[in-house]
Amino acid sequence: MRASRFSASYGAKVAIAEAHLFGGTCVNVGCIPKKLFSYAAHWREEFEIAQAYGWTTGEPRFDWRTLLANKDREIARLNSIYERVLAVAGVEIMRGRATVVDPHAVEINGRRYTARHILIATGSWPVIPPIEGRQYAITSDEAFHLKELPQRALVVGGGYIALEFASIFHGLGVKTTLSYRGKRLLRGFDAELSERIAEEMTHKGLTIHFGGEPASIIKHPDGLEVCYTDGPHQKTDLVLFATGRKPNTANLGLESAGVVVAADGAIPVNKYSTSTCASIHAVGDVTNRINLTPVATAEAMWLARTLFRGEPTPADHENVPTAVFANPNLATVGLSEEAARERYGEVDIYKALFRPLKLTMTEKKERVFMKLVVERASQRVVGAHMIGIDAGEVIQGMAIAIKLGATKAQFDATIGIHPTVAEEFVTMRDKAS
Ligand SMILES: Cc1cc2nc3c(=O)[nH]c(=O)nc-3n(C[C@H](O)[C@H](O)[C@H](O)COP(=O)(O)OP(=O)(O)OC[C@H]3O[C@@H](n4cnc5c(N)ncnc54)[C@H](O)[C@@H]3O)c2cc1C
Image 1 (cartoon, helix red, strand yellow):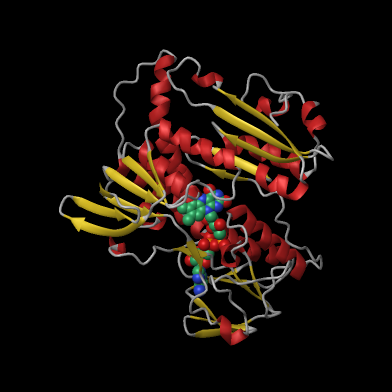
Image 2 (cartoon, protein in one colour; image 1 turned 120 degrees about the horizontal axis):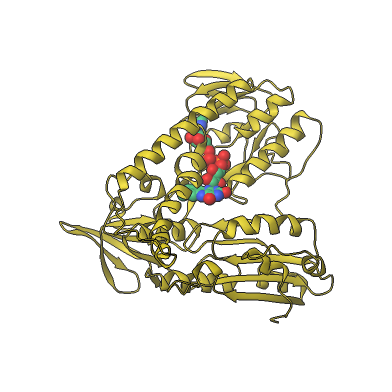
């Protein structure tokens, strides 16, 4: 959508083919409905916190069907806005699955269309490993349309989608287990963040099963029985696999245009997002670079600028901020401590760990964790990491400073906003290491 709109605004004649719903994964079965569910799940704690502030709330009751209906209404509204925006931009809309026929032609609903450039932005698809009983498991796609909320849920995976759904189910009152075959959640994130988020989620009452994964699922009249690779069995009502997604390139006709596809199904592209075929380009999840919506849309805009505005713009994947909307929230930008040590050798680390003001009058023990990673030689801040309320909102601001190459001294020279959680990022004076 973004590539179509920007290309059209630069004067290109553009058509878009969509097989399902406009807005893709993010709007329909990704970021947006996920964040709405995450808001819903956070209310449980808000009701508890409210009591410390003098409110009498009574016994809160949650209705899954109301949430689902309101979410569906909002998504339908977004779908129609997205389609209208394309029409206004002058993009020709074609409904149907497109396949590539040759380097300059695609086929949609049995008709052939030719173009100077073809962009593949077909996204990715969730996969369930081939274990016995996999037909009883679901993925995040189905989780957005469950008729009933289960009483017990097992979420499998250690990435952000797994943590987010585990937190959503737990917050909505489902007895939830998170199962991850490794020892550390959120591979690739700063190790301390991974450890602390596991601690915080466990404190909130979620069970985390490390070191094993489901080997089989058996259906019984009273629920599902999951047998783990490391021995134990567990009864549950729902198993959600969030263990990976596969780029959507199967049966797309790419071979007919000489487009090379990697073993994982992704389309390898150069820094201008062009595939091994000069007239076929690819952006977003289908390239399996950094699978986030703002990255996909940025890649789309860079490509449109390169092809239709005469400004060759290479992709820039440095310092991409990202958030995990688990409970508590976690967000990060730049390098982890481990990655920074590997790249720069010597680094300075600054940390803060504290109970946020909002929780000080409550029984809640949740703590905010913040960490800055500074390259010692240049004193540039190369990583900012946070676990705590609205971490994503805070780190978005930090991302600008880090993208601009701000130094620790410039962070220190910035006046804080008091009293906020975010001010800690400009008041960390003592090196932790
Ligand atoms: C549960 C979940 C939560 C997420 N949360 C976040 C988040 O909080 N923040 C974030 O930044 N990212 C998040 N993501 C990732 C984000 O959704 C993706 O990175 C983003 O949607 C990728 O955009 P895309 O355009 O590459 O692909 P998609 O959004 O998947 O769009 C691909 C489109 O192509 C269509 N299509 C596929 N094949 C064809 C064909 N042959 N012909 C015609 N149309 C076709 C599909 O129907 C789809 O509409 C989340 C993903 C999931 C699954």
